[in-house]
Image (cartoon, rainbow, N blue to C red):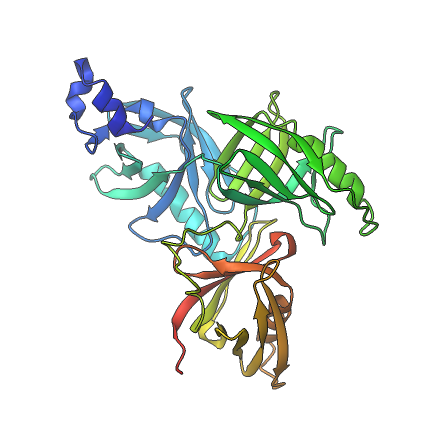
Length: 390
């Protein structure tokens, strides 16, 4: 239950100290702090690295954990009134990601050690230091599955092991607003029903088409194991861009990442607003490892989609053209390009190769544009570089 609604309904006794209005800031109300997934929006008054996600959770038994952008961390915390102390040092995994993500992660973990107080206003959590200066700002993440789409990263194979999706294959799952679940299990399409009660979920029974695929080896076994795993899901949680479905015993059933193909409300991105814009390539994310690479000189790697179905752009010192279609995904067909040598450090060939492999794409809902290869393995994010001249 959110802070404002909680106070409005229980404005008696010591709760009156908080102020009895839905929009009031709530200090020291641990009931609103725990059992939420909080997603970081500001770090020392700065925005996050594009494509990164930092989270924190607090449990009623005094434990805290989350993602620092690259690595997972865990520790303990204590609260008294509005004070909050987070244990330091925290236990942190040892993965290595892009330099800017690692620098941000270090700054975030250092900021956690400075936290002395917290304030909750609606869905907003602010952590402040000893001088009452805001160091971290989070937003409570919705756990609503209805209307979401996901690319599966791994699943339980039924042999007490979690395995990654086969290279070159894609498994998807969509949760409809009408209580239906559907997707592609690598070879066949499937569908059925799902029901959510709190954090509990029931999936199935599921039905699928009956095609048989021979390549790659093991695809049909993967499909059967995935569909079985999906129907064992009993609880779920959304954290940042990740979805986890677990069995009633707590075993991981399915892990997925938010799909770029998730529908974007028309009010956010009206019509074909991505057309006639010079999109500049800013990051490349490997969605299996979580590693994000920042592209140097984004103005040298551009693409513009025209209303007539053609496209053009720059790959460093080279220019290219082609066509695109939004039928059955988002596909790019590159045409002729210049063939100049742009230097050993150029990303021109990688850029063109990625564009040729795109299967999904669209506005990201935050003013940018995203393109993905099969299975969401590689995600290219672009920023608006201005409207093309006629």
